[in-house]
Image (cartoon, rainbow, N blue to C red):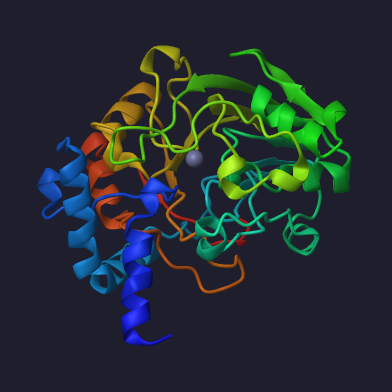
Length: 343
Ligand SMILES: [Zn+2]
């Protein structure tokens, strides 16, 4: 690809928030991070500023990811396994039971998104990355959280828990009986896992003005499931108890403080993309959850194949996130995981 077409491609990626890319502003100085509330023009200007220094910021975030690497002496309780599989996707295993949150392994390309191509779940990718599934928990039904869920349920015959939009997606794939439409804060059990869903909201990725592909997933036929048809549906925070530990997963960077009753969690799996569109997101969510440990997620470029070397999502600013988290909770460790590496 020549320099001209590459810069065109980068500009197209810069405009991706309008078509669903998770975008975060790189602050000019750490002191301003998380406290500024930009208008739409400010968000556009921040995106343009990012493009001018993208390589340097990718390097800075790479350095930060290395500094935040999971410690050699794992803080997890014995026998509990945690694996990040990119985006907001996690595998959590204990005593032979394996549950997944927002697993997304097919990784449709940015070109497929722009050209509105129908991309079905990749059976090969699911076979490669998903070893076993006793349940799948889904925070919302955008493609980068829900596209592979029907294929996983079909392959492993497991239930999937989430919104009415998720149930509709399952029905399109002929798997309606696998879907559990959750009730807010009702406790569900799968093996040694107990979990409940907390009403939440999606960050307003469209320059702070709106949520991309909002509303219910209403597509009528599986052959019409273009990426844009994966409407958001109800958004959930997910609270999980296992091995005496409490984990909390928030895949999109917004929250409803009054709905959160899960203070003092042991680990907060924190989706960091899109947080620039939510005023004081990190400060507010950390205050609501009071976590003992924060795991940053959803900072990788999810248009790249999962087995390609990882890059950072457009302007996601992991370095700025580490600063924001430190200001919000000085003594709480922040870590990142490597894609596919079990800890
Ligand atoms: Zn989303």
